[in-house]
Image 1 (tube, rainbow, N blue to C red):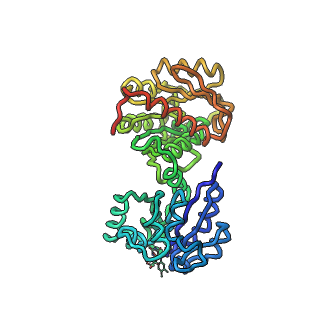
Image 2 (image 1 turned 30 degrees about the horizontal axis):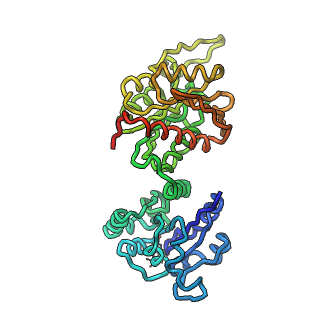
Image 3 (image 1 turned 60 degrees about the vertical axis):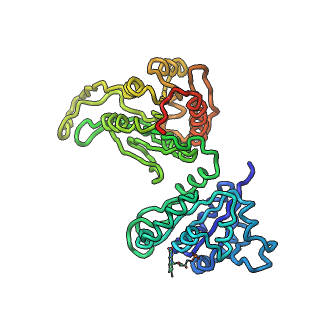
Length: 399
Ligand SMILES: Cc1cc2nc3c(=O)[nH]c(=O)nc-3n(C[C@H](O)[C@H](O)[C@H](O)COP(=O)(O)O)c2cc1C
């Protein structure tokens, strides 16, 4: 695959030391990295470190004839797929908002023809300052994209918004900016993970869904430009902060959350393993006895059927995890629940596993996918959904 070129601008924020790790990550993700630093950034991290990690000379001085052909203040951004400013200081954001070009990095931003992604990192007061907020609004209006910041403990000891966004979310934003955003302006709701039904105050029954499929679908949909909301049951994974996540641990919470969010979305992907039965709840703790005991299980409401009956104007995707007759059972689900697409997978090959063997079932055909990591499968599934969704003119678009 051809490498994409990122021009990484590093400015004078205390978070500049983190760029060493960021460069490694970008290179691991097959990017060619050209670092340009501001003078202040060099107070926080040495050019030598970033040069060694990026494998390219670090540039800073637009007046140094030994740095390129003398026109690097415009050439570098012309040959880049993206300029990423990480971390972006309050000062540098102010320069962007006003179109200043008093150093090499600011010149490259002004003379660019590629997208510009800015990851602010500064003290909470500096970030909340009206001038900074005004500058951020201005650069957003100018079409500059913002990644973060995160909230949390800061270098100065204060707690709040202003930390450099975590790299997992930043990488999703990078992918989003340079990819073809097929779901731009579309809203996708995904239910994910396992539900957990309480037996008594201390015990519960659940299933082996890990939440990995839902996590990957959410991340890929986000990178494809969608506004993503996840309703997450019990999961072994954390969702990155750029994905709106609502916790719903048991069947009833899942039902309530799905029903109250679906109307706001264009597409609903039901990837959660939601309990078909739940135990009758016993208050307190059931005392241990010498003999066996039985649990009475009550049938739960079929959420997917309910959704397709009442929200059939949305594009609805179901998942079918089967132990036998995979295709027949999945096609039966597609028809009986009136779904747009069903993704069929065998439990032994997919549930709780990093990889999956899947078949996409639609009204016309069955499309088997090669066995692959769930990240790869998610991308193929979403492209398939897009193909059908964009053909389906009759679906309500909320935009
Ligand atoms: C110790 C120290 C830490 C700083 N940390 C930050 C920071 O995290 N974010 C920020 O926007 N500015 C920070 N500043 C201020 C900037 O370095 C200063 O505004 C500088 O002019 C930015 O230059 P540049 O935008 O050209 O890189 C810090 C300054 C000092 C002395």
